[in-house]
Image (tube, rainbow, N blue to C red):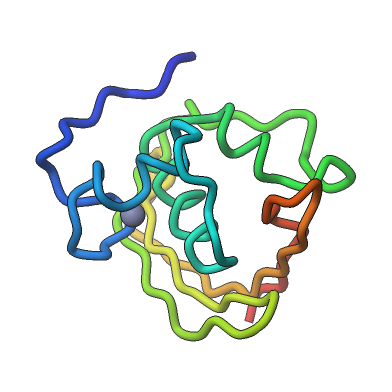
Length: 127
Ligand SMILES: [Zn+2]
């Protein structure tokens, strides 16, 4: 399923306050790979929000990416807050609404690593 269109003038889904074109889109379209784990974490959140499953897959360490990943399950992503980013870890809270449920959230500390020169998501612990 192709990513849902997102007008370039809109603010980025990751909540940075910048436009999508100036924030996560360069990572999504490959013109500027994420330079830090936090940048990648934001771009992955935006990819979940926009339904860009290909980006989520290619930035997930292949040993950890679930084979049955489906971003078109109707989950709505309501917001991201990054609490801390240090070395190869980023701690954040995601607010979301799963199909048929009220708004919820989870807080996770994610680990990233470099693979072939690019940052990829490894895994995370709920905190
Ligand atoms: Zn962004």
